[in-house]
Picture 1: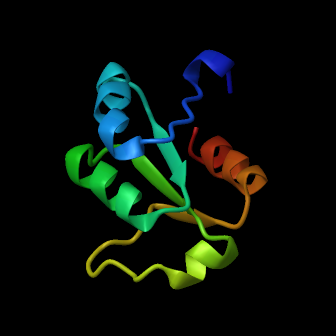
Picture 2: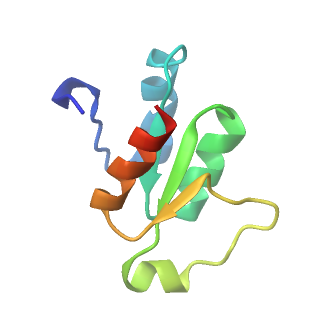
Length: 88
């Protein structure tokens, strides 16, 4: 991954449209620990691969979203690297 293509955002739901529109013709992976954010991304950008980082207390407290399953689930960032490599 190159630094110019890694985007870490504090206010994700306000900024993801801008970032994802920039990459609309690219293969994009969003990795996040918040299911609502991943769900929202998938609703607006169905071709984006969403990866749920299921870790920590936040993971166990989130309600599952009916009808939504992330494209992949990982326990840490290191695991996400293998998902991207497998698909490319």
